[in-house]
Image (tube, rainbow, N blue to C red):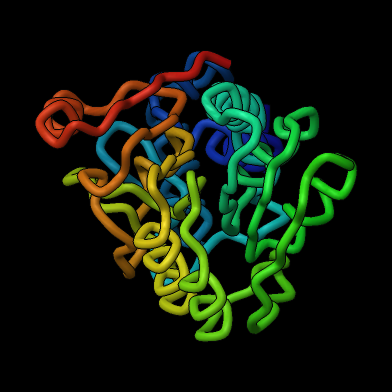
Length: 254
């Protein structure tokens, strides 16, 4: 297979898995390790991947991946996370769902819940839950971010502070090895902090591709989250920290 055919497939695997390895790609394509290293270096030179030891990851930095592209990343893992998360959400409660493809997946799993009050700063979540007639939907207002249907800024945060939610489901853009929960947009971070402060129980949904990414703004630490739903095991040090913090980690099989 020529380089021009391998590159799109390598990028697709990276988007799906969050990381590619030299050995795995060499076996998949039936080429030498040196050939794959050249492929990864070429893709890194044009900013499509970042080289790491033994392979490459999706590029990180100060801007997020496009929203439509994020929808295609690890959909099976996100669906498994959403099912497990929704299974812990009872009927007859108030709940907040924030911005992100993972929280949208949770919203789809709530279509048969009853007597929910859902508050959201995510226009996509609101549109999904319109299909549940037994769900009251409150949208925060705020500055509309057209790229992903998110409502951000002071108006959104001020609206959130008028509530005390039974539960909140939040997503993130990256998870640092020390357990810090990260995002790209400081306005979105301020909203996420308000959500956590106004919720009796907090649930984080983030698939394993977030483990290999970085973002500049801190939302919180995993120590401030009650339950973390993900699809791959954490590193042993971070797993041990979660035990110390009392943060439950639920690994969801796709």
